[in-house]
Picture 1 (cartoon, rainbow, N blue to C red):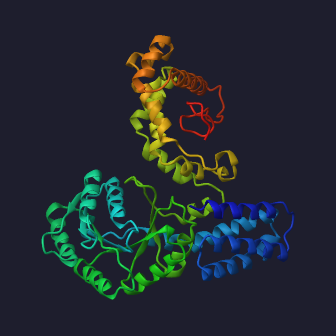
Picture 2 (picture 1 turned 90 degrees about the horizontal axis):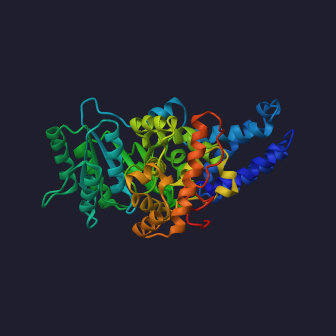
Picture 3 (picture 1 turned 120 degrees about the vertical axis):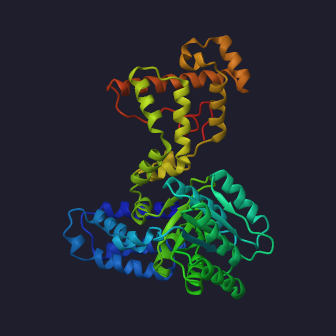
Length: 459
């Protein structure tokens, strides 16, 4: 999402780092570029003005003049101010946490415009709470949009979360009130209420959601904002904050083509913290918002902590120990290869993972890299067409076996040959790791990676 902004700012930092000392003129020239980059990213102009004033005050002071690396010091100042802009420090961290009711259930009310992603966010939030050991109840209080109730019911089944359906003749306030009784009966720890999309200038619908709020007395009112809304996200956030009263924001579609202005503006204009961001359609695509990590991504510093969290969440500890043992005994087979490939896929889109690596944004070879799901699917088909013995000992696969595997997987013999050669390269590499001889090089052509495709195509 922040790719274009990160690229513009990276060119500014390169010019600054190449100078031994910085004058006020150098700083002003750099900040003009920063101003253009932020405005092009749809950041609110008032937010840009205040932000640059704070940066300039620090950048022309003794903090930079006394530094041995003034260019890097300016980058650090921008990082600090970006983090502060989006809500940093102990107070910001406290606000960004979900409020917990002293006595369950904790009630969370979702609101926002049509198409912002409230229903999907409700299900994602349910999945996130389940991972925390909670028992959420999803409440279908969107009675305006056709099929909204059925959508939440379907998502609830996929997430394994209970859903409270409206009864005939119900109104949204009545559904919300009944949800509290249902939560007490079933022992739900959290009640997540999905409401209809509405404009903040629609008096009738705003009156309805205020009644919903009065009936269910939520501990958290979260405004769901589409990150692709751009400048208007500020107007929406301000309208709901004044007309309803909100406790925080959820930014959706952070992996889309949005330029990032909503994330940088909403907190500053409303004074309300961004609590969660969502990416992709998968129900596990919801993450707590960390201002310092987003600031690091924008400035090309990576986000190693988020990468570690994703890797930890996607790896089964028992399977990891078993894999380590097989590497030690040098019994790594094609089943293990497939398992590792699937674990990488569970971490999310490759371009997101690469964006979390420090310096990856400046590597031209990695720009636009993404996993080709069709190619990965073909690799899976080839491996699944092998016998268990062939997966454990690929060296026994001769010409007739290759023809059988290719026919069974709907691929060509050449494709099977490429995969086997590729697997042998990786097995040699991992054997070196296990024996402590090999340093970490570039990954030699993982299926779907942009460096080399197992089917002979470059992306």
